[in-house]
Image 1 (spheres, rainbow, N blue to C red):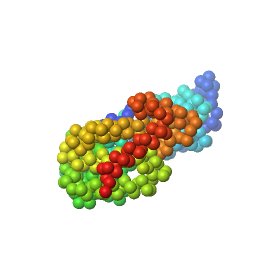
Image 2: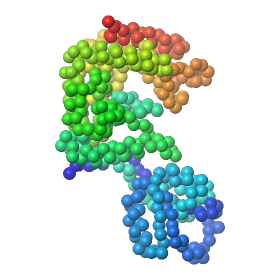
Image 3: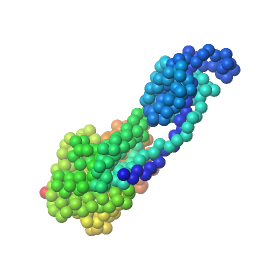
Amino acid sequence: MVDRPPNVWRSAHVATCVLRPDGRGHNDEELPDPRARAAPPRRVTVAAAADLQFALAEVDAAFTRAHPDITVSATYGSSGAFYAQIMNGAPYDVFLSADEAYPQRLVQAGLAEGPAAFRYSRGRLALWVPKGSALALGRLGMREFDLASDADLVFVLPDEEASELVFWTRVAERLMSMVSAYTGQGTIFAIDTRLRPDGREGALVQTESAYKSYFAERAEAWEGITYMKARAVAGDLERATAFLKELQRVDWRRYGQSARSRSRLAQMRRRIEKEQGAENPLKAGRGGYYDIDFALMYLRLKGAGIFYRALNTPARINVIEETGHLDRQDAAFLRDAATFYRAVDHGLRVITGQAAGTLPRGGPQLAMLTELVSRWTPEHLHDEPIEFELAHIRERTRDFFERLFGP
């Protein structure tokens, strides 16, 4: 039997309201005397949050036994979707919402009876994880998660729990749906699981042995290096960390002790520049942030015999310098360049609400970005107009990249 300890995700208030059949609101004084009301309807339609389906089945059965002359017809779905439908005239009698804000808004709009709206439960939404783990890669893995970032996640199951693979695949799918679903209050964040073995064609949840086999035999160099920027975020964290250490040993034996990774990474970087550089020069263009990232990936692979639990970009630079693969002057510049690029990227996300690959052409947005970057960077990185600073950093970044990956 698989061990399924819960990790609490968040608390939730669930509330209900009785909807006005005529769509008109009234205050407490206008409510008719309940004793004077007509006989109850023979059919009651209920709009209920999807996670109430199992509990409501028991409530429905008990209600039917007590009131055999009344039929309850329940529809399950998103609370936000039901709210929108009711606002547009959907003919429900009772609304059971997973978010108490929706019934409150319906009362304010005069579409539900105020005295009949109440909180019927306060619960917790729990994420159940196995002894296996969820691993975060990319920005989330490096603790550099930002506005509008995707969460790069993969799910790993211990070999001894392989019989539960189908169950935990459903759990992972449910988690992804909950976190990335669009609601009336927006979404938490998008999840990308394509960094798992075989990408989108591979199974969503895979065993430890499946991962080890893939990285030992078929993974590309960039895939192995990507997992050097991974960390455990759920499940058995100690076991997951040990698992990542094992994967790193596999990568080091396959790529770190040979020169193959150098040429393959250089080819991949140039292909990205050709395909994405014009549209996204800050990251993918000549001298962009990807020059730094690919250089650090290669240098990190050379020292992959040493394992580190989690490293953001400045920490990666420090480790590579301390292991002798980067001289002091280059390390100082890369720290500055990475800081500048991240400040610009974060500023653009704050201003536009999304990742952007180019500087604003001028006007208020460029002025705002300049002000934000000046707050987040040392003075020597904003002592001239931001366009000039960017041009200088791009040139020096490409010079370093060519020295490392050149012929």
